[in-house]
Image (tube, rainbow, N blue to C red; front, side, top):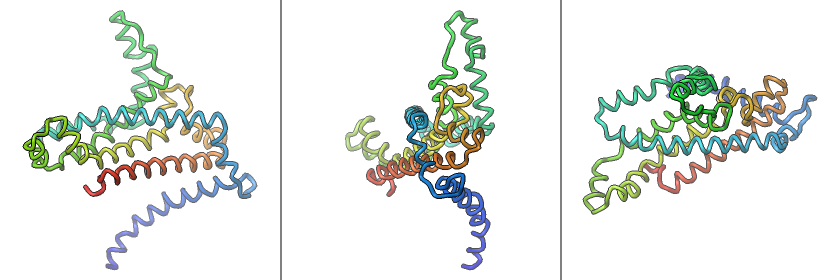
Length: 271
């Protein structure tokens, strides 16, 4: 037993050094002023019209991106789960291959594709079709989010679907359920844990992102992540940046708790 505790030492050191201590630093700056006195004014900065607009836009785009990812990912995960093992492994490899490339480079690639004189508009111009003008718009940001975070929705759902006992599905059909009834009464309820995991893994990074909005939004569309980044890097105001980060953390924890609540109500935790 003592040796097992020693094995946990490196993990404990890592967690304290790179999770607990940085979080405590953020909490300290969030509740102190430049003079070091206790204050709630940094957290209250979220109530300014500009920051509320940025937070609302972040929640809206994150929700839309998560919904689109779910709509695209679930059918794909079902198709993959019905393939043979060797076919599935190859398809999954192709699907996650872009993830091996740096996140920033993938986003820059979309910027090159979508810009006014980019690859897509050059092809459309050659075909005498109207230009595609979505760069520096919320649509471009949603596209970037969906492209970057879609694998995080597919893989959890796929991992749950392949573990569903085929005898359960066959039993439902033997009892007279058609394909639609089998899906809604058997397959989808059993896949809820994967859906919950996918929603969490997409919504949280989408809500906190600032790179995608910077590159594909052209700096014209501020999300709460951009506001926090500017507070730290441009304004060198760690107190306000930490206060906004703490508020955003509360939103993330609340969304995860809400999702977990529905997961428990649907019986997903028992699967």
